Picture 1 (cartoon, rainbow, N blue to C red):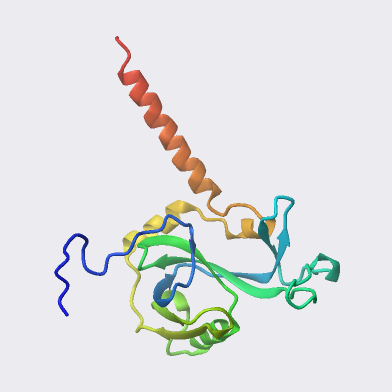
Picture 2 (cartoon, rainbow, N blue to C red):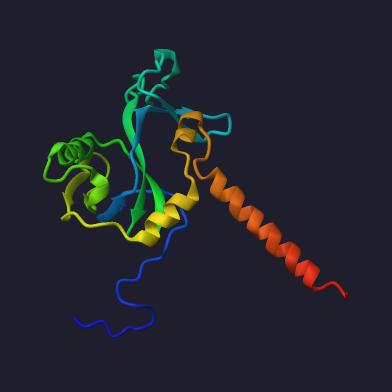
Length: 199
């Protein structure tokens, strides 16, 4: 069936402004831009009822008393092993942080990395296809042949100065980027005001 509605371009999706990549239903293609940080992650409920992730380095202990009780099972929730890394999200056309806690994906990417024919996963695109929801969710992973990443993407990434280690402290890894953008906005506002001065 031919689509006769030309109101929006074919294949259009509403872009996100999130600084974090999430695996959406269907195909998710990305390029890892730098080495990952790794550790353990668990969730805490704040006074306002919001749940926030707490991340620890691999050698830092997590006390049993720190883990909240799962309301469904009545048992303490388990901490998960996580990877966090900067990626280029092809669908969103932006640099984001991707966190991977799925063991099947971690094992697959480790396998690619350990294979001399493929090596460092910053050298090729990776595609994760997500199917289903909840406990029925499945993740299929594949990779493309080696290909250099676009130089403009690398330049943009280097200029962003993302600090992944901030995740261990519960801080914003994009703080420098956000501060820089705010400074630019202030300068533009100042120039606009000065431009209106009658002298």
